[in-house]
Length: 81
Image (cartoon, rainbow, N blue to C red; front, top):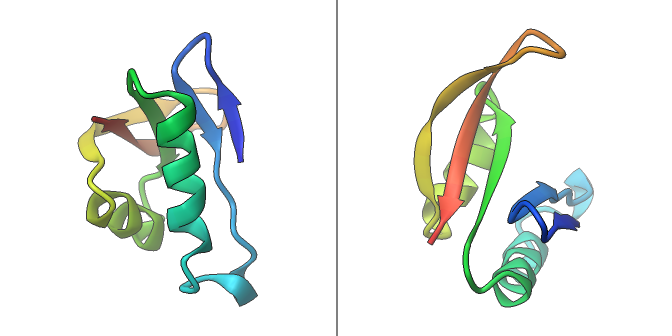
C-alpha cells in the first residue's frame, strides 16, 4: 500500500493474487481509512472489474471514468467517504 497524504490519494493497494480473498485487501483499506480519516481518492484501470467490485463493496463511491493520458488507458476513480 502506498499513500500520498498531501493529495489524499491512495496511490497503490496490491495484494498478491495467491493471497486475495483472505481479507488482506480489506485490512489494508481499513488502514488507509485510519491514516486519512478526512477521506481519499484512488484510481484503477476501468477494465479491472475485480478491483472495482472490491472498492464498491468496501463502501467507496464510484466517481466516474477518466483517461489516464500517460498510458492512454481509461481509469475508474473512487472516493472515500
